[in-house]
Amino acid sequence: MSSLPELYTSTDPQVITVREALRSVVDPEIGLNVIELGLIRDLTFDTDELQVKMILTTPFCPYGPAMVESVRKAAQSASNLPTFVDIGMEPWSPEMMEEGAGGDWGLF
Image (tube, rainbow, N blue to C red; front, side, top):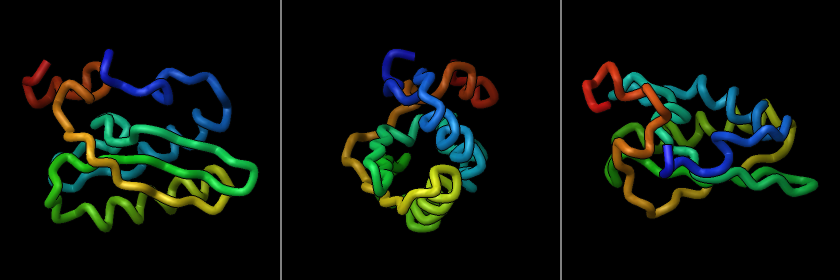
């Protein structure tokens, strides 16, 4: 989908490893993982840390803090790097979802 960041198509082994690990983090209200929802907007690998930029489906998501911590833990475990999660201000929309992920919702 056009609104998905480059990390969704990257063939870099580090990115793939972290991206696949993040599929274990599920939004409990929606039942889809953060990758399917398009919530992970960027991964920046430095020599000694990983920065994850993510957004939430709504600014007042009641599960936001728990999801952010789950994303941090999953990315840190997969990358073996200290990991920090920054919350972006970009508004989420269903068009950000991975191709086919909205099928169960009847969105696509």
